[in-house]
Image (cartoon, rainbow, N blue to C red):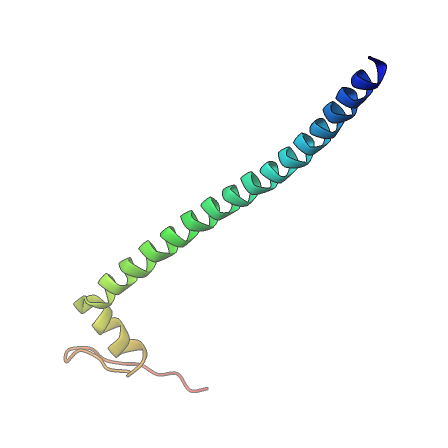
Length: 85
């Protein structure tokens, strides 16, 4: 009878240790899932920002801004003053 109790005890201890290992593994997967959810949210926000910028680039305001800053163009009734460096 004592040997049966001993074997059952060993099996119980083995199952408990395996259960703790599995719980640690599950906790690791849960943490990874949370990180991936956070990354997904960041990428969704980034995608929205890119879509907003793409829409802005289709406007006349953007075309005028680029013409002024990159090409140095002005409207017909504007006067440009330059300072000497």
